[in-house]
Image (cartoon, rainbow, N blue to C red; front, side, top):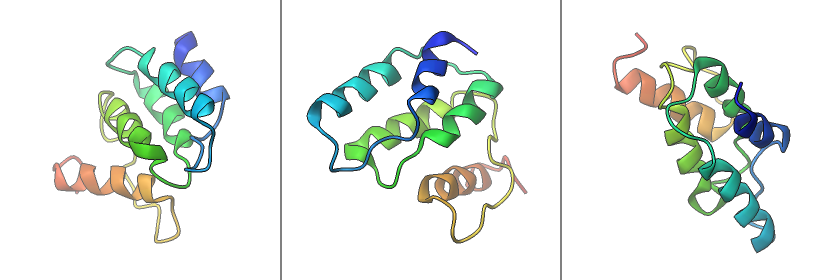
Length: 100
């Protein structure tokens, strides 16, 4: 796994809307440092980085980055209690014909 991906993953899930501007800027900079495409291993690790909300749109950037890797990252439905971003990744794979 590339160091920039490891750094992002090590810092954990994206913060929620109550995070400071500095924290948001730091996480965005980390995310932007990751070049595309990501590997399958990196994509699977990045899936753990979704937070409780869209983090002012940063979660969409993360989702699109994950989708640059080998798809599908999530090949099974995580269920109704799963993180909304996990559900979204799975449904996008289904709608794209990547998962039966």
